[in-house]
Length: 95
Length: 484
Image (cartoon, rainbow over all chains, first blue to last red; front, side):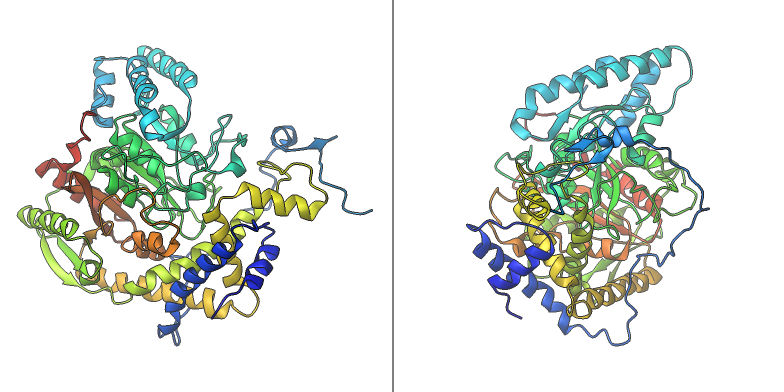
């Protein structure tokens, strides 16, 4: 599996990360190295092996559907980059 | 004063040999005088520490107190602390002041601990050398030209330099054990689910686990007594009674079987490290244990499986850093897409971006089965190796890391060379097993760690075995020159 600059640009778009033009070649090379490392997995015989999602195969614990948290909007919004009238501000989405 | 262990400090406070204010001030003074050389703290909370030390002294004068009352320690800067900046070693969270405490932080607060500050770490715990921190690398107190290991390198270096008697840490692929080994201290990664992850900034949620770092196994037992708890706020926390880990430290080791995996003594292991580990194993034989050669045949799959699973989970976890609700936001975004792209491009460092991109690749349409599913299958094979081994032996031992501390820049910009630093520690995270590192020798005056891997929830036995070793040897008492 070879990975090209165009693949990295697509991944960066999917992950919403702007890449630096000066380092993109280096990023492509190092990601290719990491993928070569993980490709060693392909040699493993995993026929019939159940994938393991949790170390102790625990199942999701459920709790009663009742309100347990109090509203802390002021505390949470105090650390936000931009808020107004209790709302988070972002650049205009619809013209 | 600074050579006292937690156990010594607790005893001294109980006897009235010194006050909490005195010992807290002593450590704060040392941090101020010496940490310029090591960079082990990101934030020092001197004022708050002295205030809580004074309150602890008052409380002690008024009657019975919890065990850690007035005892100074530090938290890795991955644990959220109410009102105290929690950066996770990243520009992304340089301005983040959490409105709540992590459960681990709350547990230590309830036990009366005094917090000296927040320790340096690799950015988002991604690294094995502490070179990825936004706040600059931590230097190893044994040799300031060398790395302290990572990602909990700040906690490890601060303890080694006697700037704090103990600190919390976290371990996703070796981030407690490898820096403990490289800095000559004791560290324990508990069984997955034993310590609450609530308020611990997530890297790879099926692997992350918090644990103690200190100079001795006895101190790690005291800390684990506080850290381990069932927590309804962490959906993967395990509801199982917590034993008093201090109660088992003095059990004799006769009759115990130690498994020695042949795969952990192969190519790439530094000969000096190997000799130190073999000497430690011989010491265990003297203490009455039996060595049994075992095989963990799927060990070679651990690093490749980890570098699918950890980046995949990281890419999902780190999607929350969007410049909207907290943390860094780029200047003058022209639209929402630009806000996301530049916030994340500018806020994350190179290693974090690399792992997010690798994770996004492994999870992207068409590749999921070949990578993520395959890695989860390999993960089960790795776990089964350990399950089979624990049919024959009580614990498994080997080296923590392939060599002692290396120089800054030694792994250059070769991420794969850096990833192989965790070749002996990653498998236990994939299996969810507890692992520990105990000082067992010096090579060129740099510490070597012995790794102890236990069966699920066998932390008490591991601490017992580590403590007995520390009763028979003095490696854990060695200090870097001039710091004792």
